[in-house]
Amino acid sequence: MPDLPLPNAPAPLTVGGLRLATNLMLAPIAGYCDLAFRLVARSCGGVGLGCTDLLSPDACLRETPRTLRLAATNDEDSPLCMQLYGAKADLLADAARWAEDRGAMVVDINMGCPVDKVTKLDGGSKLLCNPDNTLRMVERVKGALRNVPLTCKLRLGWEANSLTAPALARRLEEVGVSLITIHGRTAAQKFGGSASLDGIAAVVAAVRAIPVIGNGDVRTPQDAARMIAHTRCAGVMIGRGALSMPWIFRDTWSYLTTGTIPPPPSIERKCQLMRDHFNHMVAFRCERSAVMEFRKRVSWYAKQMNPCRPLREPMRLMDTAADFERILTEFLDWRLAHDSEVQAGRAPADAEADLAEVA
Figure 1 (cartoon, rainbow, N blue to C red):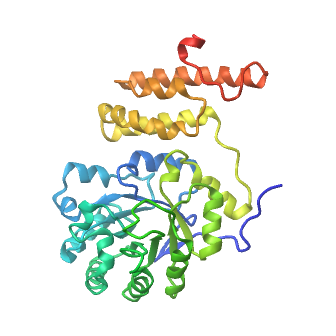
Figure 2: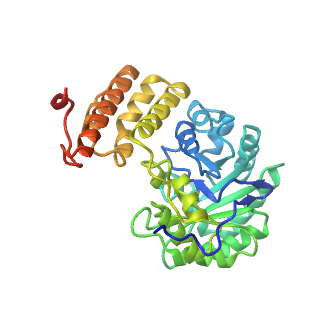
Figure 3: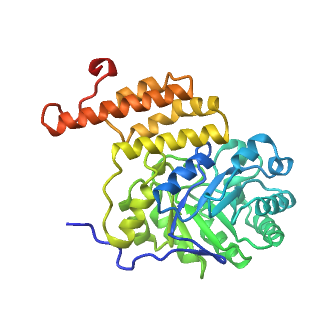
């Protein structure tokens, strides 16, 4: 019997004047949510809004090679939010205009990152500690934008005894912010413990009209439904749950609107997603970068591809794009043969084998 959808099925979001196809967003995961990965997630369906990695305003304006790579986009990568971090109002305002000129359909200010190198410069979650200064900064950035909405991504507060997010969210709405995303942890928690649904609900209750997006610990469609039902947030932002399962947005939107989850992608489709991701990285960066990055990223994909030892180990040792294609092709041939053996009852379903054993 299928799981039931929410009592009131969610509607696609509107952010300022921008209407999204769903109420699901891909988080700005530092080091992971580049153009190559965003295109893979979008190809699976269900992504309402994608977001860049955190962008340094100063590096944007100087157009450093790394920042240009982080901010890269194309026609298939739409709609896109560019996220800025920092605490210098004039610099952030100029960078917001820069982002708008380079394809951002939403500009977001990061008020949630707990990483020391960001908070030591008074950016990220440190902005939660001085709301008055933060509001003045946001007003300056909002005034610099011409046609795109400004949003903010918050944590609950700096620590458990200073949960400033509800009051700050209400004031951000008053100065014209179009949407709030709230990660249900404090800065002190970093990525430990559990995201607080009650904390997210408090932010939802604090604003008057703008949408609030919940974030944190969403690894399945059921997690997203639980968050929306408990907090009444308007949508969900998914981060690390998408790294091993980029089709989670497709599955979650289906679950929220119909109560059913589609069958998982076939092993052929999963391999093709890996191939697309790798080829995008070669095209947007270079072959060496793609090889080095996929030596690490294969472990994320492998979580959804067991049994997969013939994929994991060789790919961690590959040196070229030709190696990647050979390893992936040999793995797929092995898996199809293995799955056929399982269906015929001649092999256990969880068997792992080395390529040498089946050559």
